[in-house]
Length: 244
Image 1 (cartoon, rainbow, N blue to C red):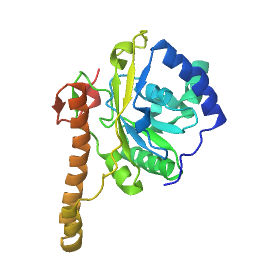
Image 2: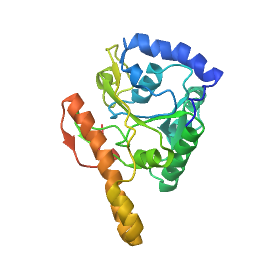
Image 3: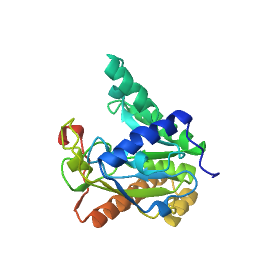
Image 4: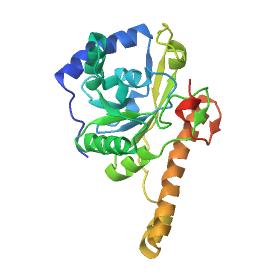
């Protein structure tokens, strides 16, 4: 893919103001920026706090256009505070209704479109915030997108966000947050076994193995997070009722 597309002036202004405030307030320490590719990337990180996506965006250069998914409720109309929040979130987020499969599919298509246009995307593979320090099973959509676009996946370690933004709380504590970008993963894609089945197998065999390979690659990334953070990986889907 070509070089990364430049963000809008509004995005850069918000990055220079709110982004700088985020970095100052949480005393952010950023590591591994040398691992960030020059072109588009899919940044993935475990989801511990509401502020996670904003922290990743604030840690990256202002001129790099980075989008993330946000629940549809953030885009609803309301009083002036809700309208202001909607405008702010819209500058870097794409809405998704987590109860609507069609909305989820449209969100994946929007992610692909953003990557093909030269932008980057940040997302949390579990699909929602998790209830404890462990790492949980990923929803594999981001791997499908990586296969389709050839864009590298950059694992991001976040430390301290769950303390700075405590569970089920709207209050923010001034606590140090660390953001670490790991080496990009550029070899996601069909395996030799899958290619052989695609050539000689039935449609059902291809579909089953395709899903197994995608889920295996997603699991390997989540297990990487668990090893790096020194916590346990749990091969279980997180439902919203299970979270904080």
